[in-house]
Length: 454
Image (cartoon, rainbow, N blue to C red):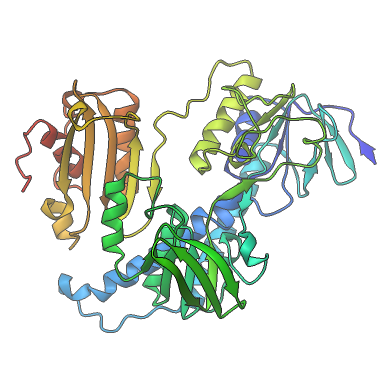
């Protein structure tokens, strides 16, 4: 085994959004930095998560728009999708982004090791047969999809496999109707696959407000939805027959394939458990507000912490960890993290409500997409915005179901994070005609000043 003598200031394990962000930020601060990644650069987000899903979603959304081209005065008869070319496009985009990350790391003078890494002791990282010394280690090894014991580990897809599929199934059972499950239902149902959604909780999108869940269930009426339902048995590996326990008794679901989207579990590098690193109840590495772990000199960022598994949270955690290593005072806040689901229409929300709030404690404003001028030009009718404020007018939560809700939520997140009141939020101008007016109009509805509310 080879041992290096000159220690790194920072060594990062994992090159997903948290890992590569940490490495680049450390290098920008003049710190000697190394990074190890045994798989593709970009992590889950780039290779099997955010980017592949949104690439497919752009294709199916364009297909839907072309199918309705006559509404725009355009003749585009019988558009159809070439699934092999959709996958090829995804592969091209993913490869380009992964190569871009590799370029950025090398551009900033970071030593890159194409290998998995372990932590044999504090201050050391083992990469292959080489033992590297480091003053600080940032663990950013991400997470992998959770399986379902009843499936016995075979004959099903997770997000790790689904984007490598070359042929569409005739039918698909999706277990889990959170954000990932709903996006998969959107993709495959738009491609003509007969989709059944199976959710253990009492509604789809259980992380969103109930009014959002109920609205989206109506939008996706062509998808068979089973809630408060648990898969208790599976026969076959494709086609399959699932036995599903529901409040009305057992149901049988037949599907060519099964896709499991019931969450992810952190990947802990070898050696850390033996060193006694503290974990959270969700199995992630426990950190403090500076992203320090229970072992001196070891930090963690991203999905490996187990709680907020979003690329944008991972990047923020990486920034905080590097800042602390460099002597800064930045700290991590998990307040007002926006969530986004790329269905059609998109769903986005930010903020929280009191655990036990009475209707009299809050003021609510809404505005429908169908009354929005810009949406009319887009032939978009489905969706709405809903804003909840406290009795003093301070914004508490914003939910948006609308085209490009993923872009609109940033405006709302800034307002809520800065504690703006409805009056303060409405103090700035909103251009016309834009989709962002839906948030303005909903805020005006709280004050009973919305001119365009039906």
